[in-house]
Length: 380
Ligand code: HEM
Image 1: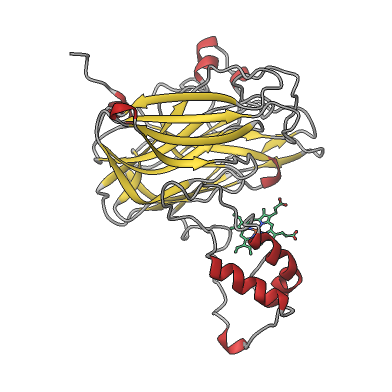
Image 2: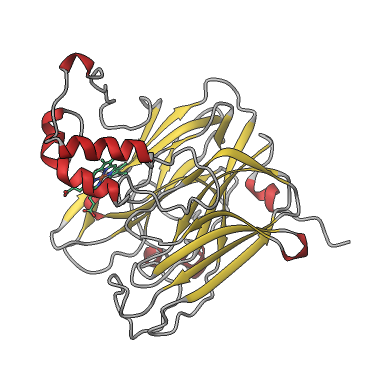
């Protein structure tokens, strides 16, 4: 539904009243206990009351002279007009039913110079079948998926040798951005950007889900370049635990992971990811003397709203900071989305298996690469 004109909004007046009073709309899942986020769309109490009073007064149109100018949308994109659009060279056919293994599509950028990307957006041509898309930056030195075909979708199972097949899902290439239903494009603050070295490829990892009719998709990635050389490079890192077992029926399985930052960094944003049994998620800093500083808490995780949470003010972190992510999962019958409460669940690509990934973005000096960022000094 579009909410651009009075005529479009009017039929929803009662529903708008209810959804805003219940705070189910606009969608936002961060506990107000912790952190301030620049993309928090929540309405103030006064705004909620204004909407309710308007609906109660039979949703009057108001004076047309007070109306704001119509919004001018850029055709197809939520970011500024992209400088470059990289599209899957061929469409991927999606069958009517069954699981589709993750598809990889290597798209050459043909960039002759290094590029800094300030905004980026992934747009599936067919949103109904795209569960998620991850765009990785494969720099010319990266050995990842060398020997795999370029420009055509393939899955790990299609690859000729065992090592290539195992390597498909594990890479230390930087992530350009992630798309999942409800997610917003990336728009880094002035002076911050993602780095794409000359000669890189963008590798799309596509998770397609079937829905009863055969169809196809040709996803695109739009890029807006920085006008000035950036002060900071943005890297996407992750706190991942892939070694859990969630017992059948367990209503509250806790899975934890923590890691130490090897260098100073500015913390920018978070993107928690679990599947259908995901119940809650939080990011903490483990401070000395057992103190815990919570940066983001999602008390009721909802798989159908994969949001990123962008800090209103970046948090400077010193080398040695311990970051922790804690997830809980509900594998009981009381979870209405649970595909099978009678099974133990482990990590897996498909939605009926589980994941525990706390993505987070940091800004570092422009010369630092993701590989360097992870290099740790030998223990003294
Ligand atoms: C003040 C802002 C917003 C208002 C007043 C609002 C209002 C509503 C209302 C009234 C409905 C229920 C429609 C019905 O009766 O069927 C709804 C559903 C929905 N809204 Fe919003 N919304 C807001 C913001 C957003 C935003 C920012 C997004 C996307 C990021 C969004 C996405 C959706 C979706 C996907 C549904 C369908 C949900 C479902 O079927 O489970 N809304 N919204």
